[in-house]
Image (tube, rainbow, N blue to C red; front, side):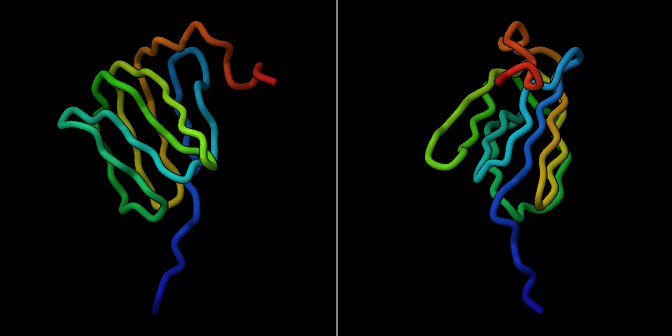
Length: 99
């Protein structure tokens, strides 16, 4: 039986004080402790430590980045949850205040 792969991933990046990202993306790159890891919809389940670097993601044809400094990520076939300690973007408005 062929299983249909999801066409996008729901990505949430959560810092201690706010939600930094909640978006449907087509692809994602995470800074793990061993280097960058590319994630596409349908990726196998994975739990990994996040290093210092940039989360890069693509929405439609636009590429976006978010700086992080450590944490953990849970990767599932249709979603990715990132729990980060710090971010250069923590002074930015929380996602719920963006309009």
